Length: 113
Figure 1 (cartoon, rainbow, N blue to C red):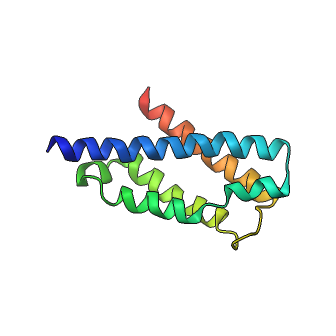
Figure 2 (tube, one colour):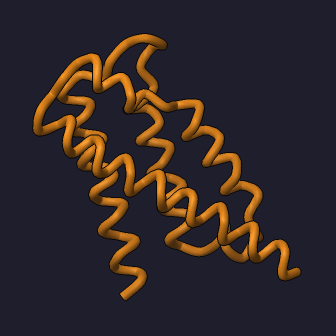
Figure 3 (cartoon, one colour):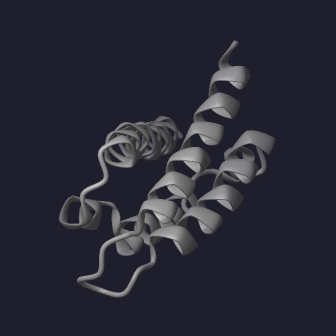
């Protein structure tokens, strides 16, 4: 039982790290748009992997309203970053991505208060 909770924690911490990292990087790129640099934000496979890992956490956590909401929002974010391979995100897409992860961070922070 302890091992499963530890695995849940690893998955959720990894998810939080990805969200925060994406927030920072997309914010920097949105302020100083650079097409080649914007390619780093194209990570649909990584996001699909993270969402699959969320599907492996305990049922109690999967049913948590915040986890459900975050997982749903990740699907919308996946659509933003799913540019064809080798193509950069546009400035508009980077801005939409940054807004989406900013909203996610705000929701997570509200929950932790």
